[in-house]
Image 1 (tube, helix red, strand yellow):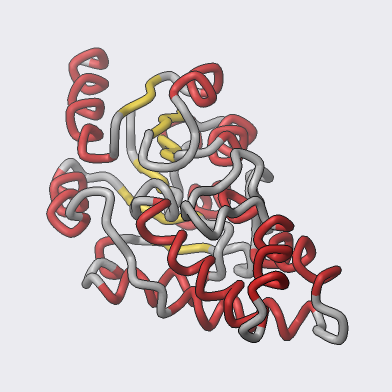
Image 2 (cartoon, rainbow, N blue to C red):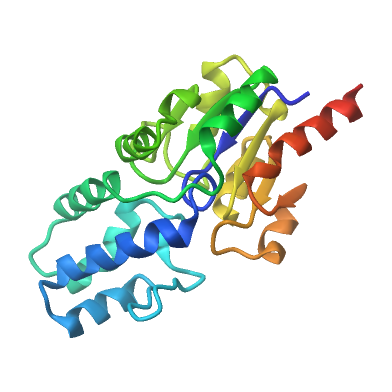
Length: 234
């Protein structure tokens, strides 16, 4: 029986390209201090095309923690400390203009009416995640929000997912982990959860299908999937 749903944030709750392409451009431009060649070098380090705004499939921006992204940039930034760069990234992340994959507040209200516990698990910072949800009035739609810095580790390790299950007394087998990247689904599998992929991030269906029991166009299709599970159980 489905008792809870966990959502990745970027590429799942929020459209990845529309939200993070502009953020990445702004960060790299700021770090380059107005030097186009330096900006281009930084962009290469994180797999980002400054001209098209597209990310390479292996870009650390897609699914990694701010620390991992910062480590990719630091060799190009002599004199910059890891802590200072992560702090700068988190500050910019908290104010990034977000583009919802679907209208979140009504969707989460509908899922809550099914009696489901809802959570967000992201490799972004928890504070940045809460700030972005608050921007759109959706922070109170979730029972749990955890980031890479919440004390449970980052994905693809299952720590933050299992912490959600413990916090609400749920069997992991009854929780669906919904995400747009293989990191999300690997974490879900490691936690013993059901895994659902969505196509609002950079990954393609063929990337996600081997790890997911269903791949949906976006999270707006989740109520139909949940209803189908209830019919099977009955």
